[in-house]
Amino acid sequence: NKGFYAEVPIDIEFTGRFHDVAMFFDEVSRLPRIVNVGELMIDISAEDSFGTVLSVKGEATTFRFVEAPAESAEDPKAAKKGKRGGKA
Image 1: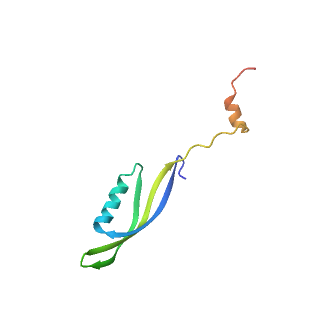
Image 2: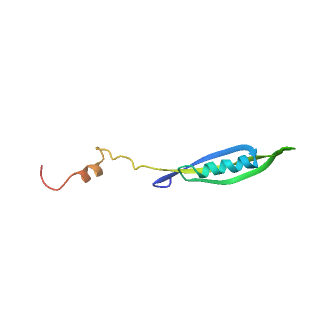
Image 3: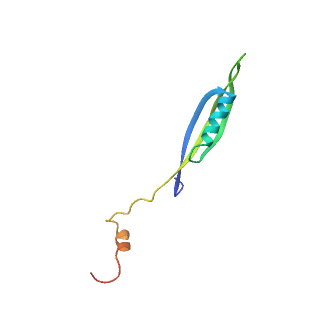
């Protein structure tokens, strides 16, 4: 929790050819929220006459807003804020 927002880390691990890996990150970049990708480890998983398969491991971090907790009616500070000067 960072105050008004919280970081949500997500471990990622997948394999694919270079084009597949590039398409994955392209799709992540088009998500409607901010996603930071870091600490990537990319290794060759397999090679054959059709191409190279990559193994990708890392962490993606997204963010969400943290709503302020609702004030309780039993909270004396909240009760003072709700009162106005004068007699009822």
